[in-house]
Length: 370
Image 1 (cartoon, rainbow, N blue to C red):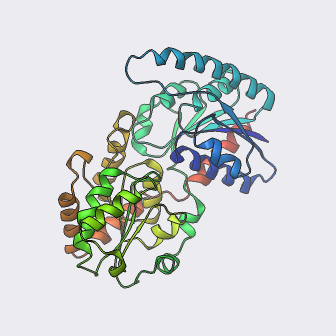
Image 2: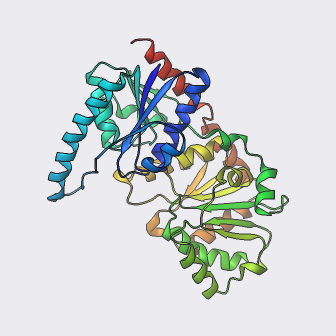
Image 3: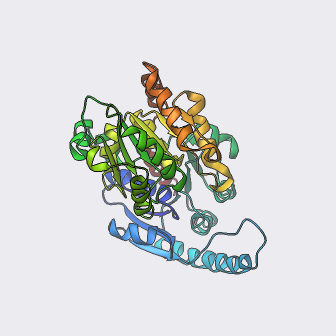
């Protein structure tokens, strides 16, 4: 069995793809894979480190307004489609799978036109333009949110949830507490703006942590992103925050053990990327969500609203985010007995920890039609 997998641009597209590959290998150990990504994408670094064969297509995204560079982009897209055809003909896959990003377009279109069974995995409540176009050609669509199904042709979409890393569910609270030196009798707030950080969240947290250093009853693990770390350390110092005297506060540039951090979290302050939300709900972690305002078609706000409507999260729009608004919301959540427990239960009901297995079974079912 041979399967092409494509997805790139961000970790939110790449890691779900790798998770699906792992799930298929659990079922069919002899399966062969080829990962196709963008030449300059994050996947070109991550995927080979996973020991997966990788081929690159040179592509770039379109500007969302008229610009001369879009003519060059069109040229690259045409060349990308030609190379995608060659890759599919040479590899002769039994199925092709896309997990998002513009790089999926040429490879899934080429596979579909060659009558190879195809599947796209749409992670967001509001689908992106690439997957909307591909939906007219592909065989099946696995959606991460029920509301997304209505944006696709009738009968193609199946609600599965989003695939999450196995270690997210296997991590234990005690392991996290030990790894970060926190007290198990006190609640933990996990703050992260994603792998690259979020400047607006980081700066709002400066005043939150200034107040938190006086109140050791709540513990904070704040992940700034590598590019923001030095700036936030300087701002904390200027604000009078002495982390050496506040063992209940930890500020880190990046976490390689995020699953352990999530295992001990009682509340998360996050952006609203689909993969992060899938992991939060799988573990039943209530959240304060600050959607990234420049995400394509504002899809993060739609993602966040789905959790808010279910009672699993609160939301602060990026334009309304300040240290005061964030601090006030955190105080409200911890002041009301049982509030976080109710949110955690609502979050858990939305979780789909079995999603990777369900999607893997869908892909294997497609290969039987070859």
